[in-house]
Image (cartoon, rainbow, N blue to C red; front, side):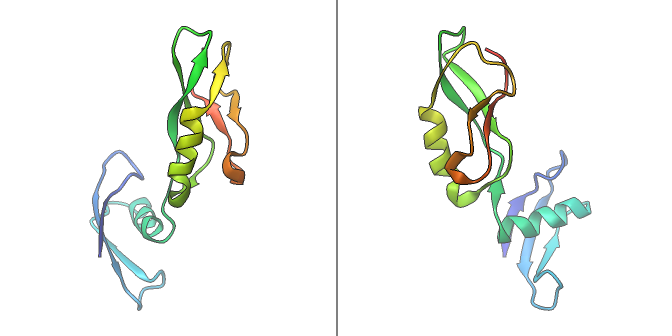
Length: 118
């Protein structure tokens, strides 16, 4: 049994996910108020992943650090490694929102882009 807070919508239901061999998905989800919560709960136990946000070092800008985010979902087992790369990356201003800061991080096919201009 797994207990997680759903992040599929702003409600934030408390989900209880239980292994259930007779279910078509192999799991039963309780506590969800919508189908998105059910899908989130199953994915959370079978393929946990996140869109990452962080900050890179910014030179010659008003800020010392530039907020960034990934363009796709990063598998949970790669999050720490991605965050080390993000936190140690340096860029120089000017930067536009959406500029690619790190292309294809860890070969995952996901870019890290600027979340604001600097």
